[in-house]
Image 1 (cartoon, rainbow, N blue to C red):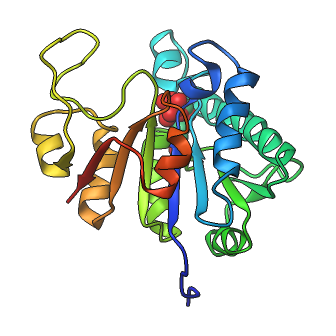
Image 2: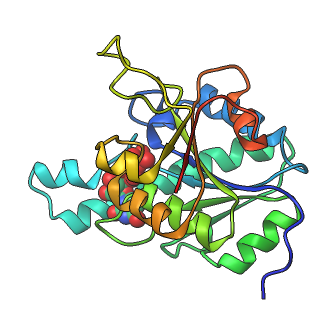
Length: 238
Ligand code: UDP
């Protein structure tokens, strides 16, 4: 029996791209900026974070160059843990308490993934960072974001995007006629092949009535605003 929730609770998905600033590895200045924004909301909003790993490895890409897909996916998952530790460090430098929970056991650096404990951490004003995806090959961290949001009873899953500030009818970088949606349903996104997150993830959100907000990382204070529920972006619902 999960204790009653008093405050807004969100699951923030940060892709690996965000950590690397478009490059391989971690860009400390970028991670620090994000950490400071998250820290400014602690005490008001309960936040758990799912971290991607595309700035290190993507399993599907390594498999295309000849690696066994599952092994490549495990490399991808291990990459996410490095991003978790970077984010943990910059958050703790601001004075915020954090816990990393990994779906692959590595007790020196992270707790096991224990959902009820994750909820408890959030209730004690700790930011919980989920690493190693689902611990399963052939999954994406988008799908894990949906799953973890559901399991920890988040009110909303927040998809942070770099280079774009919401969901558009077409790619705004290449199509000047692209229009931003204020709201969108999962059915519309799936039918229109609008890539908000991967299809497995979207189906999971749709089937379980999970609310999603898509926003841009770039605007000043946007991450903090998204956590508080005051940012501009696209709201995706059932
Ligand atoms: N991955 C996986 N299972 C998971 C989550 C991730 O196998 O549950 C692997 C997969 O190879 C993926 C990589 O980890 O390509 C990095 O995650 P993702 O591509 O989702 O990161 P992002 O695109 O958000 O940076």
